[in-house]
Amino acid sequence: MESAGQYDYIIVGAGTAGCVLANRLSRDKHANVLLIEAGGKDDYVWIHIPVGYLHCIDNPRTDWRFRTEADAGLGGRSLLYPRGKVLGGSSSINGMIYMRGQAGDYDQWAELCGDASWRWDQVLPLFKLSEDHHGGAGAEHGAGGEWRVEKQRLSWKILDAFRDAAAETGIARIDDFNRGDNAGCAYFEVNQKRGIRWNTAKAFLKPASARPNLTIMTGCHVEKLLIERGGQGAVCRGVVFSGGGTTYRAEAVRETLLTAGAVGSPQILQLSGVGPAALLHEHGIAPLAELDGVGANLQDHLQLRMVFKVSGAKTLNTMAGNWYGKMKIGLEYALRQSGPMSMAPSQLGAFARSDPGQATPNLQYHVQPLSLEKFGEPLHAFPAFTASVCNLRPSSRGHVRIASADSYAAPKISPMYLSTAEDRRVAAAALALTRRIVAAPALQRYAPEEFKPGPAYQSEEELSQAAAAIGTTIFHPVGTCRMGRAGDPGAVVDSQLRVLGVAGLRVVDASVMPTITSGNTNSPTIMIAEKAAQMVHSSWK
Image 1 (tube, rainbow, N blue to C red):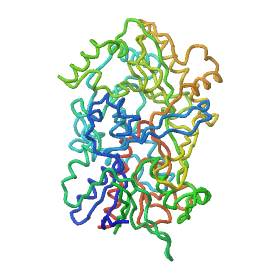
Image 2: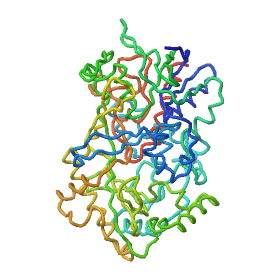
Image 3: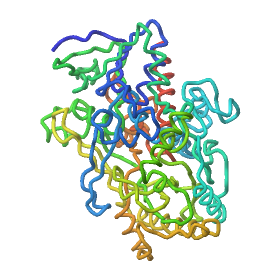
Image 4: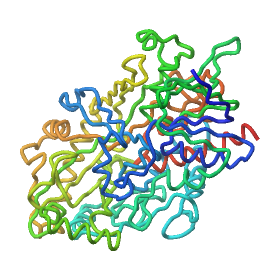
């Protein structure tokens, strides 16, 4: 094993959080920072063209290509579970939607971990700190930061009609989802810059990459953390990683920051002897810190994709149905960086309640002027739109567990979708609400006809069965190294994101969320990294 040297901070994973931390920690000229990434550089052209996510997901160049275990809640189906494996991580392959969630999400975190600094009014300045909002600075938004937020560069009449139909159903038209109360319907704002994807590698890492105190290593696979156990407990001294056929040891003088995401972070902890003792013993790993919560508490948003055939409406199905249409689409993007190739995967959003008893919206819609059988397959030959709806606050909990002591072996991912009666009830209500929206007068000129799951499903039980048949991930795994109060048996980190029982180690990514946010999870992860950077600076200044 060769030495890769000593650093003040070692960051494991150059994804969303890792790029932010690398930027912020390397601002201290007296601190040497090492950033380790298993994937390569973000120089693949399809990363930067917004519609290129179709070429990045399930591509070994950019994606870990995980799959879930067969899920009983989905009728035994196994799902593709994309996670970014490239500089920028999942921000390089995701849907580019800028979403913070609801104020209540963060107030709940503060209560669960006993730290008021996680409240909405305390984290809002952190969102604004890195934001560069198209509307400029104000009470709710920031300008001049690294994280660009723009309006989309296209609109669709079929989506405008859906928005009008939602208003007729009681879901008001609004213009901003990010003020702490996202109830209503609007076009999503996106992390793009003039029609080009804006990932965290461009936003945060590129400006910092020339700093002499920041070392970036790509194509390097972290095998485990260097954790020693002594009289004062366990201490993390650095990492062991491999690259180019050589195994290296890098030492951290101050801290190691694990930013490998909701799948990678618990996997690396477990491989390093931090996790449930029984699981570690099963794979011949000596427990150095017994934490039952490592890998538990997995939460994700399950999207239910309803497809409706339409008549007399322009949709991407028909636009891209021939070579002439595809040529026009390509030319529009080449000349103006607009049109369908600038599309985020979802254009129109809505937040609604599954029933009047919900204090805040618990459903999110992603509406698209296109349809297909499943991700990766061709668009349907008929004009159609997709109204995808998910339960924002699922009560089902899954887990991530190592499959072996081999760090190259993919972990076992079990989301446990629809494993509670409450989640099945909300799923049925969500499908029923979608039908009410589509039946509203504003959409009738397009004669919508339900194609998937189909009108045969009517009762609550039948609708929950339909949800199991059509449900799929919307790529928002969180919670597998969650924050908690002292004495909380399921907590993995404290409110400062320090791993319980292991000195010199923090986890900084979506895995620390105790509960999932009410919306897309990428920008909340940036906020977590901003907060962590301030915590680290405060600890060492």
